[in-house]
Amino acid sequence: MQGIIIENIANVYKIYVSPLYLGTSGEKVYEATARGKFKKEEISPVVGDFVTFEVTDEENKKAVIDEILERKVYVKRPKLANITQIVFVVSSKDPKPDLLMLDKQLAFAEFLGIKSIIVLNKTDLDEREEFKEIKNVYQKIGYSVIETEAKNQKGIDKLQQKLRHNMNAFSGNSGVGKSTLINGIFKQEVTIEGEISQRNKRGKNTTTSIALYQIDEDTYIADTPGFSTFSIEEIESTELANYFVEFRDKISNCEFVGCTHVKEESCGIKKAIEKGEIDLARYERFCKIKQQLKEREEKKKW
Image 1 (cartoon, helix red, strand yellow):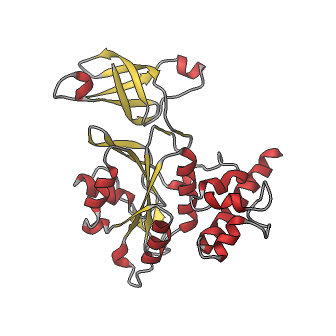
Image 2 (tube, rainbow, N blue to C red):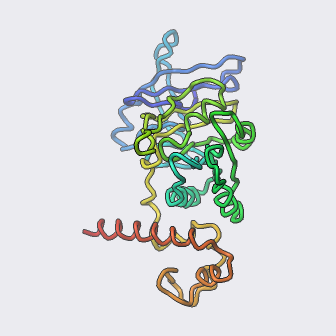
Image 3 (cartoon, rainbow, N blue to C red):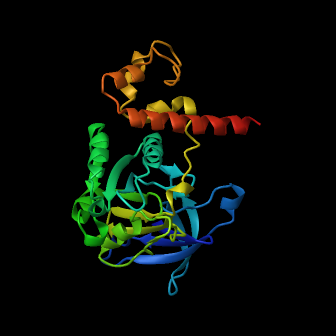
């Protein structure tokens, strides 16, 4: 049989089998373990994997995974396969927007070659409407930005339309409202909602495992632990500029091959900033991310 892994707890996998595969109006979920050969091959099934499996106990829905089908995308941390779109949730207030984290995430999605959606949540708490400036910056460079008030169900319908026909991963710092949004989409509590610490306004991370939720036949949502568990170390510091979408067509204007876009004066990206074609604050965050990647690369050499 063939299905998709929707959950993994302590190497026990839940596999969803769609009605289309079964040829009936029903659907099934099996609980499976993986064959020993995967350990020898140093590969493990992960949430989002399409797998073939053998049923060992139909009555109790027990099975063993035989094969992992080809992955289109693989995320190393948290372990997740075949996602086609990442939904980056940013809180407009409490906690304050973390745009450095957002730019890391967007670069990572570009690196993976998948689509991005930015959700500005809790807009009702932002009395000065500073979120509008954030929205303008990212819409200008081509990203889809949706305003939401998850607690009040505002913007949920628009977000749902963007999720259709995709395997979506929700991401963002703890406390920004990922779980509240997902629960709003399903009109029921399918994830544990986080709490905001009133003392320091930082989120308390409550999601501990990855789970894949189905909206319809070809639309899924993956809820992940806090984005800090994602790693962008696969991106080389010298390649980072290629994953800032508005930088790409400016790189050819650099005077020197191998321009770092940091120290050089005759840099196409810097010239574009002077002309107002690239947001200065986003460029400054690019420099910080590049330096962080460079420092990690230097540590690995030792």
